[in-house]
Length: 252
Image (cartoon, rainbow, N blue to C red; front, side):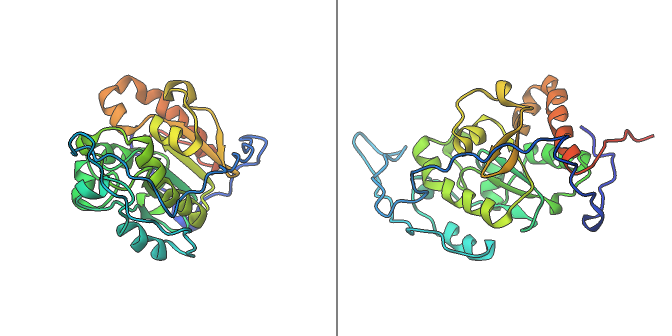
């Protein structure tokens, strides 16, 4: 995936292609379970001894805010799960608050935890190339993760950690209102959409979240390990490009 294609200015982006080309998926059903509970149960701390628990601080009953700027300090002060004990920074997310395109990954790694920004390590460098190849600039899109604190050792977030954090992500989606979401990897698909299939079965197929078209594809970290999967990932991203009327042209 090359960044040779010159990104179009935001003001001159083509209008979305007609729905007959890329059908909009039906809205995903709303979960009956609230995003936040006023009295969360204690969750075992990964570093605690036998029977050790850390009491999770109560969270707001609702996230009744009208902007990302209002949501950010709430997330930065979050202590809903044990990841608050081991993090260096909360990685809230970054990009255009009115982005038409949103990328969602699994969680911060070491570099992201140190800098407080999403996708700034090697996987982030590859994501930047993917975004550029799609004829977007990183500043035009919005980038976030399922969990906003780094799981120790870059492990996959536990269900309890994801449940504790997913409300922030859903509120970000509600505030940004992107036209398309790209989910990077199985963890993002599993926790946001409730899918349990592997990413190899789900990638390249249009899904939906609250009426927003969703394209699952491989996580950039996986592509760094399995370069043979880049061709499939690029095919997935080209489907997204079509929604925005973009066609990749090889540099001469």
